[in-house]
Image 1: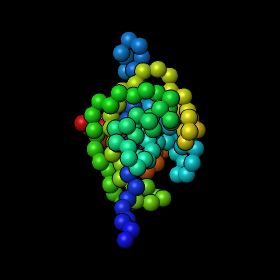
Image 2 (image 1 turned 30 degrees about the vertical axis):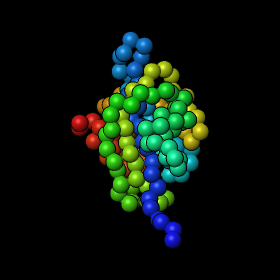
Image 3 (image 1 turned 30 degrees about the horizontal axis):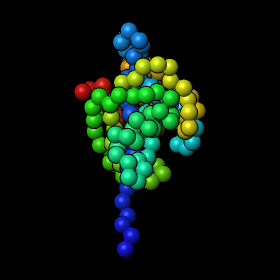
Length: 136
């Protein structure tokens, strides 16, 4: 009997800081693959992998940043949040230093001050996720 469940993903709200611990902004990626647009960096959890390890791996793969997990923001499970298939996202807030660089699924990496985030260009339910982050 095959068990059918949603895909499990991780997303990371990366708070970027400079070497003097000054907040520079939130890291977003321009997606290389559909759905196209801006997104919080993230990806799928591999079988046998903890979500925390998947988060650290995916952030490195997409932005070339080494992140420190600060806290769990939430779990986002609306069946329609991903137009491709049902995906559950475990979303973390994390901290990083350095200069992000586009890798793997990211066409470009951008850093936005909170008040400059272009919510209308975000894909999936990432506008909702970032608003939850801002309102907490």
